[in-house]
Structures are given as structure tokens and as C-alpha cells.
Amino acid sequence: MRDYLLQQVRCLDPVSGQDAVLDIWVAAGRIEAMAPQLSPPSGVTVIPAAGRILGPGLVDLYSHSSEPGYESRETIASLLAAAQGGGFTRIHLLPDMAPPLDRPAGLADWPRRLGHECPIQVGFWGALTQNLAGEQMAELADLRQAGVVGFTDGRPLPHLGLVRRLLEYVKPWGIPVALWPWESRLAGVGVAREGAIALALGLPEVPASTETAALAALLEVIASVDTAVHLLRISTARSVELLRQARNSGVPVTASTPWFHLLLSTTDLGSLHPHLRVTPPLGTPEDREALIAGITAGWVDAVAVDHTPYTYEEKTVPFGVAPSGMVGYGLVLPLLWERLVTPGSWEARTLWKALSTRPAACLGQAPPQLIPGSRAEWVLFDPDLPWDVTPQTLCSQAINTPWLHQSCRGRVVALSSIDGSYRSLEQPGASC
Image (cartoon, rainbow, N blue to C red; front, side):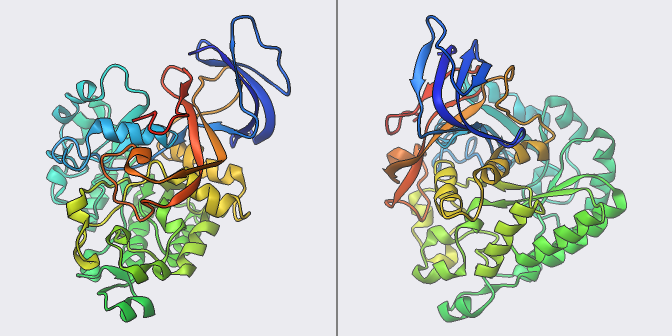
């Protein structure tokens, strides 16, 4: 359905600053008109939307695809269903498939995998180094020609000399480069953020300097080369301060944090639930508050999903040996709304910026907008709709999340992406 009228919906548009109850008429997949009240044109389907929120489609900066190579964890069809069900109209996949996306031939089979009727936009990060080994430069010029959205290994690069050469090489292109500040030698075998809680639980510790020392070094290199870089997986209060200082000094960086670092901290580790094992490890309550404030202030630009699927068997092990990561597409918007917007920590537009327009800007893309003439790329969200987190409602083959079998409030009920069509997700599992 490409011609419809959304009636009395709360329209949030971070770019224009709009936050008002409007009627929105979409014709041929584009927004034709927006006004406090519109008369339904002849033959146009009217969709009552009072009490619901219409925002630009959500944009995920980076997540993992298990296909090809690890289809037992999740297929691309499962991933797309989960992303669509969570309101994401654009997703961008890291190159750590098997084989990794370190040469243009790796992109050749993706049109077939995605299919002709893929409901959302899918972009791909190309690898910076061959086989993601952090030693030799990948075929960057050929990958760029093949259409990658940018370059990252999604892993720490251990040699700053190589980082400098990579940044010098790609600088003329103006294409996004993403780096993860993480010093593996400092992390050692640690699995939890250093402090009294890790000590009490008997967990090997990861010092905060694992991230901050690497970040400080990267910022120096980035400043000297003056190539724009996006920094992945920021998780500490000190990192937010370093970013504030760097950006005030004109260092060309943007940054993101995975969504769960805004909701969880070391105080949640008492259960030793293996789904809470993530890298970077959950920070302290002070880290969490600093990240929330950093996004409000703009020192941290965006919230990433970093969707990381695993099988039930892989995660059903003791915390200390569980693989790192959790799924999140269906949970990000409801939980951040419920925990941050509802109590007043964030304005609704702050959340939408962090999940939509700012991620697009970090990628150098035009952001989705709700203005007359724009393509209808939006998500319709009911903040009061209760639902239970189950394998069916997550729409993902993977269910490694600590929120499994819990109740949530707030659900995506429809979205529009590639062709501007209205796609209803009202029935549980409708996107699956």
C-alpha cells in the first residue's frame, strides 16, 4: 500500500525539530502533505494512528551477519525479519562473515541472498585488512568500487603504524572508516569491568584503560592525519571525556555506543547470566550515566545495535567462557523508550536522533526525514503496547538476550522503507 493517510499521529522529526500531532498523506511512496487535519483524498486508505508515534526509520551503524558461514546461529532472512520488526529501515553489516568481506568478490552473491523484495536497505562494511588479521591492507580501492559503505575490521587493530597508513590511504576518498579502541593486551583474559563487583563475583577483570589508552592513542593518530573516523563501542566515562576534548579541539571523529551499555551496568552481573557477557564489558553505573549524558550533549553521536547472534548451545555455558554479544533489533527502541524517554532522562527526539539521523550522518548518508516531498521512510511505534519477549516476537533465529521471557512495553506496529509502502506489523511475528 503506497497511498494512505496516517491520521492524528504524533510526528517526531529530529532534523526539522517537529514534534506535533498531524495527519500525514503519503502518495506513491512519498509524503505529499502534513497538517493538523487533512481531508482524506478519494480512494486513499485512512489509518487511525492516535496515540502512536511516527519517526524517521531507524538506522543501525554496525551489526553481525551469521550468513555466510554461521547459518546455525542466524540466517539473513531471520536477521532481516528481526531488523524490520524493530523498526530499522537501514542496517549495515560488519565484514566478519566466513569468508570475511575483504575483497570485492564477497559482495557478488549478496543480491541473491537478500532477494528482490528485501524490505529494508542493507549496506556492507568492507574489511580494512586481509582476513581481518590486522596485518596487511585489504583490497580497499576495489572494495570501494564494489560499493561498500565504508571500511572497518570491527576488531581492534594492534599496530598504530598500520592504522596511520590506512588513514592516509583512504583520506582522499572521504569514505567512512570505523575503528574500535581496544588494547587486547590490557584486557588479557578479563570478562568483567574492573571493580568491587567483579572482585566479589570472582571474575577476571578488564581495566577501563583497555579502552581509554587505545582511544587516546587513536585520537593522536587521527589528529595527525586529519582523516575522519568513527569510533566503535565506546563504553566508559573517561572515553566520553576524551571525546569531548578531542571534538572541542577539532579532531574529526564521531562515536557510538552499543544500546545495552545505556541500560545495564556491573550492578546487573549478580546473576552471572551468560547473555550479559559482552565486549566491551558492561561498565559501572557512572559509565552508564556518562554515556547517557554524552549522547544528550553530542559527544557520543549514535546508538548502535551491534546485533550479535549465537546459538542456544553456544551461550548455555558459564559466564566466564560464554562468547561475547547479544541480539537486539526488536528490543532497542522499546527498551530505550521505556527506560530513558518515559522517565524523562531523554526527550523523544534525543532518542530518535541517536537511533536514526545521527547514525546516517556518521555514514555520510542523507538522513531519513518526515517532510513533504521526502520518500516515506518511517517507523510507527506504539509506546503503550505491552508484549512478551519470546523467540516468536523477536523474529530472530537467535535468542541470546537477557530480556528473553520478560515483558516489555512499546512495540513497532508498522514501517516503510525502500519503496515507501505501508507494511503493517500489528500481528505478533508479522515481520518474521
